[in-house]
Length: 130
Image (cartoon, rainbow, N blue to C red):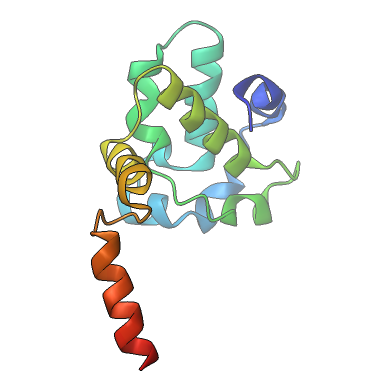
């Protein structure tokens, strides 16, 4: 999803905080910035020019996109769509997560995320079929 298409969701968040109770990352860290409410606040500050993309990157990658926040959101906002759009924009701006870059490189080069030799995979496939 494109960043531009999801900005309105940030503006619709009423910051009620009900999303915190279901967020597995928030439960582990107790950092409001790791809850959906916190992430929406951060992205709102980004939209207002108070933060830059490099300042929001770390928090945007600290989300499982499990959609538990959506289950308790009174406004029914698709927070995961916003997070995924923000991540896509981060990648475009050169702030992609290093793991994602490695996975993409491996998939392009060997057609699998682990970078394993395709010939070895074929050999193992034949063994499994025997």
